[in-house]
Length: 100
Figure: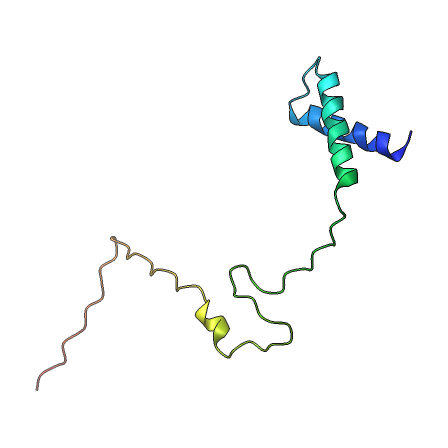
């Protein structure tokens, strides 16, 4: 079995599984798999992507450029909201100072 035939078989199996393993659809699955294998063979090989070094949403930085001081702080998450007071507990009140 050639590498191309093996790839078509893999595609057909994936298609069959993704459709819930229906019976009687073999011809359609094999045809779809052949077309996918042909498209894969024709498509230019893409270079692998470099891993992202900046967090998503951060502005792009030119290679070799130094980030501005405090730039990370501007993208910091807002503080979490304060916890709601427990209605079972009484709030503390300030004591009045003793008068002479």
